[in-house]
Amino acid sequence: MTETLANCCPLCNEPAHLIRRGFSGYRAPDTYDIDGCDKCDLQFASPFKSDPSIYDAIYACPDLLSGYARYLEYRRAVLGARDPLGLLASSEPMYWFVAATTGELNRDRSKKILEVGCGLGYLTYALKQAGHDASGLDISERAIADAKRSFGDHYICADVNVMSAQAAGSFDIVVMTEVLEHLDAPLSVLRSIHALLRPGGVALVSTPNKDFLPPDAVWRTDNPPVHLAWYSRTSLREMARRTNFHVRFADFSVFNQEQVAGIGGRRDLASGSGAFRLSPSNQPLDALPPPRGTASLVDRVPGLRRLLRRRKYVRRALELYAPQSEVLGVILERPAGS
Figure 1 (cartoon, rainbow, N blue to C red):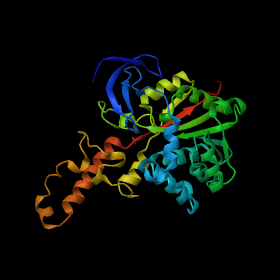
Figure 2 (cartoon, rainbow, N blue to C red; figure 1 turned 135 degrees about the horizontal axis):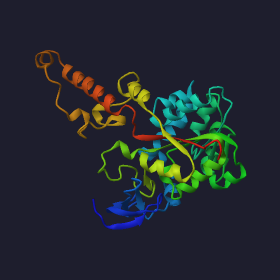
Figure 3 (cartoon, one colour; figure 1 turned 135 degrees about the vertical axis):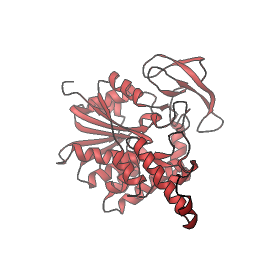
């Protein structure tokens, strides 16, 4: 890791060091430097500045971009689903986190929920179909117009920093999935969410999980400026401290057991994808040697070696990684006295 002095960390203001110079941007030929903070464990892009024109280009053809095409699929799928929230929850850990936590926090469906950065609107719709009093907020006029056409008049086009002054203390739960990493003023947005919540209210935030990969991994997330920061638990604890939230993190054991161990069966371990892509030695699970003591049997039964390997390494992965996911599920509580 290069120790060249770079910019100050956008979270804790400590001097950061240069990790990688000239990292490829989302749009060629742009490049960015990747900096790291030893105090709060944040990796961030330099310059630390969003580019709205990138999103105009993305939303002009989202069906051609793998990271965005699935959102169109979710929008279509929830409209025909008997249980839209359950459908989303079985598809990705961030939606499981939102579904499970809102269900626990709002058993009687009396709490008021706001989704910040609702985009196409399908998660807000799914929450409403599950009986929650939910509305969606996005700064994009195009996204809100599309959401209203698809799902009804449950959406607001506004900047969260402006709305926080107009609707202070109006919500019990704020949901924000896969937005934090896009922001060039993340502390400002979290302070606005704090203001939107009633005392004792909770924000549910998901973001790609830096802790999920080895400590020497460099920027295993979307190229800047689409993603501007890569967060860890340490980073989020620092953000919570600076924005007056109590913080805890979701346990993804149930999701992982259902989806990876074969109950749900939607993940493919052989591809190295999903929540268990690495072994304890940071190798793909399917690259490890087979279990010992099965040679005579596996030689006689076609395909048994593969099944035994899968069973062994699924069990090992569950033991080591069960609480974790490729996303962080962050539960931020506004203290009752604040």
